[in-house]
Length: 181
Length: 122
Ligand SMILES: Nc1ncnc2c1ncn2[C@@H]1O[C@H](COP(=O)(O)OP(=O)(O)O)[C@@H](O)[C@H]1O
Ligand SMILES: [Mg+2]
Image (tube, rainbow over all chains, first blue to last red):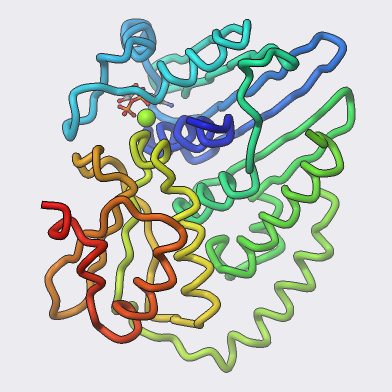
């Protein structure tokens, strides 16, 4: 992967496959601690301890189309390469939380990349799932919550092109205001 | 969220349009592979390009949908096109630049862009 936002898209697709109805994505930058933390939390079917352990191994997948699952191991490797850490927590029936910490100024940290396109792709692909995206840097923050959007939109689906354009515009604007990297 | 007022205005505009927008049957499905292999190979900009092109041309009977791994990772990004009365067409190694042609030639005019298909690789 060339951007962290592509990892986020991939990791959140696992949450979709796990039957989640709410997927929360958070990017938190702490320049004093020189850290960037990315978490994906879902309320899907969850994993037992063994699955959680195996999922961090590149030769594990429950898919049947190919024998290896690479999404989680690649994300983990990305975090570790930047001097960060990786955590996968979950319980069967209670959802899953993945948290990757990156060394913010480390030369091997991938750029965050286009979170606007990632969120638009996720919402377009699963307009009936709710997504929350939070971005913060040193206390300045932004949030997009499809539950709030749904309340305003009433019968208009989240996958309508105009709505997706709104999502992209909001997130791109916030990234520019808050991150500036 | 701070910008809900803007969304409200957008909703009012769309609701006004909905009255005159004819509900059409979806006839064409464009399926973009969005598993790890697809995403790593560049599926996200391909998906965005299809969505943009379809909405720009107001092709309201065309659906752009996402799927997981279709098992041919070496050919990603992979896009499958389903049109009524036609066999499935599989486009491989797609890029955002190729999208306008697929939409114009195949989706709108019914001529498969053979040089982008899996058959052209074999
Ligand atoms: N959010 C999640 N909820 C439940 N199970 C998950 C989740 N994420 C991953 N898994 C399990 O871990 C496996 C490995 O995931 P991943 O590395 O992304 O590979 P893949 O998605 O290609 O199988 C998945 O097949 C699935 O069984
Ligand atoms: Mg996966």
